[in-house]
Figure (spheres, rainbow, N blue to C red):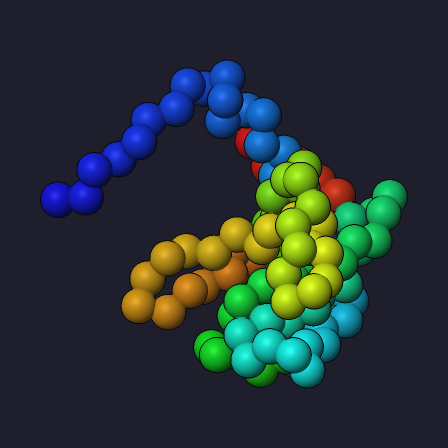
Length: 110
């Protein structure tokens, strides 16, 4: 059985989870794994890179609402900066977590 690292609730609550709408999905020419997502959070649009290219076509993401980790420090990937993280269920294939019907861009997840 895999060992699990525990964190306090205070540490967990530092992660800000928000709903964002993917308004554009692009493939990165210098990467076989990464998509560049342009994500609208209502008050701000961000670029978020995700390594799901081996599993999905670009049109899977565009126009849909997903859950993102919003307040992560920027991270360089394939020479570009990613400003957040798309949350996925980790299975044989990663499944991005879609927001439920009725929520709005920018809504927080608790």
